Each structure stands twice: as C-alpha cells, then as structure tokens.
Length: 119
Image 1 (cartoon, one colour):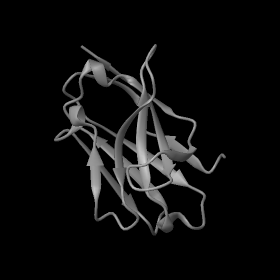
Image 2 (cartoon, one colour):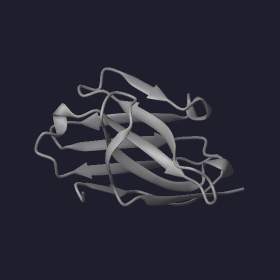
Image 3 (cartoon, one colour):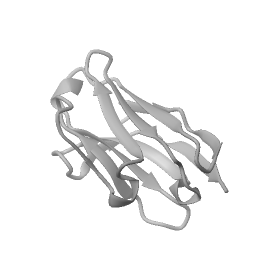
Image 4 (cartoon, helix red, strand yellow):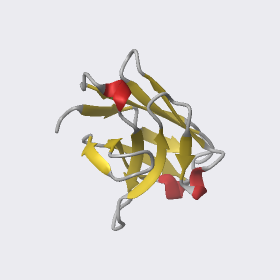
C-alpha cells in the first residue's frame, strides 16, 4: 500500500491529449507487470492497459486501442499512460496498479487521478 502515486490528471476538451504518470516506490519495480485501470461514476473499475516487465508487451481495452499508449521507464520507476483523442466517455478516476501477472489482477493500487473530458 502507498507504493504508487499517480499524477497528470485534469480537465480537457474532447479531442485533446493528456499524459498520466505513475511513480513507484517499489525497489523491485522492474520485476513487476504494471497497468492502468479506471472507474467512472456509478460504474465498476475497469482495466485500461497493461505493460510487461521490460515494456516489450502491451495490451489495451478495446475502446482505447489506437488512442492510448502505455509505457514505462524502469530506471526512473515510472509508468505512463499517454491518452490522445480523448472522449467524454473516458472521464473517470484513473488508477495505476502493480499486477499479479501480465494482464492479470491488481496486487496494489495508487490513490487515483481524475480525468475529466468535456464535450
């Protein structure tokens, strides 16, 4: 708990871009698969993207494919989510997560960062 801290959220207009960042305090960061999830008001938390330990593999929620890009910098212990062509339906609290396996369930969460996309 408390090992992941997100930043970069904000209010943007539809069609604009935003980059989220996640800082990890885990010393073994490079050993973990990482991911991003989101939770919109009144909805369940959903998977958005995942990246393998060395960054060589990524996977995405279908609705964000081609618009979002997950990346990582193991030297800095950072994970990023570059979001382009944002839509109002992307509005949610976005959470960084350490995963139990690539594309698997989360083992730890950050506190979340709010992304609001206006139409």
